[in-house]
Image 1: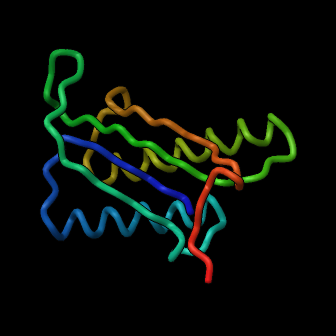
Image 2 (image 1 turned 60 degrees about the vertical axis):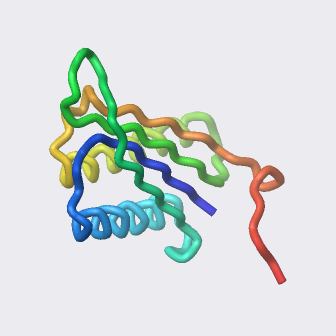
Length: 117
């Protein structure tokens, strides 16, 4: 299950929050080639301070399962992933790209759990 956990000090309205999370989940589904019901997104609004400022800041952590044919393929994938995530964050929050931190964690299939009957 791909997971995205986002923390920000941006103040979303309830409607914006729902639209944002739906957009993030949809984009992750496409990027990771996973069905939308398998994608989890989380959003926490926090008090955050960066570079002596409380201007909008975003921290996002992505956990995913994906196989790569080569290190070059993985590098290109991560660049595309980061670019697409940043575009979404900027669309909804107008955050300065220098105030965004993203962490990508590739999970192993053995290290990921999912419920099966």
